Structure formats: C-alpha cells, structure tokens
Amino acid sequence: MCDIPGLISRLEAEELARLRESGRERSLDSDLIDAIDTAAGGPGEGRGYYVVSGSLYPVEARDYHLREDVAEAVLLATEDPADALA
Image (cartoon, rainbow, N blue to C red):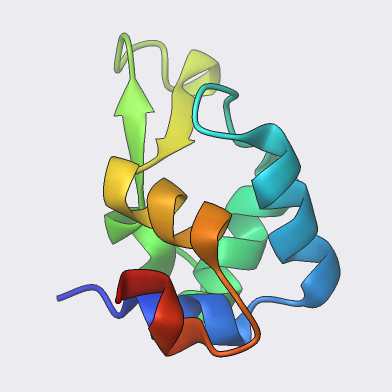
C-alpha cells in the first residue's frame, strides 16, 4: 500500500517543488523518478506512485507520470503532509 503523505514528507523541498511545477500532465524525468524511489525506500520502490503512460515498449521510451491521487496530494501538499489527503 502506498503511503502518500509519508512519501511527500520524505521528498526534499526542491524535489517537491519540481513535482508541483511539472503538474499532472508532464512526464517525470529520471531525476524525479530517482527522488520518488529514494523517498519510497530505495531503487524501484516508488513504482506504486508513478505509472507508465502510453506504450510499454521500448523500455527506453517509457513515459512515466505520477498516479492521479499522488499528483493531487503533491499539488495540495502543505507543511503537514497528512493534510494533503484530508
């Protein structure tokens, strides 16, 4: 199960700002994917927070986006991450 408030609280302020700037429609770059993975517990651990949009193949061309509920929480995040889901 994804802990969205926990993930948000473990992201660096700069990473959270970049996620907010990118919004719901823009794809995640490798730096943001790494940041989400790190905040989720390590390499590959953030997979539940972002999804592939479009084709799965070729792997190099995958386009990753935040899940809708995660994007909503990130956009609404306040000083208290638990408020993001209230």
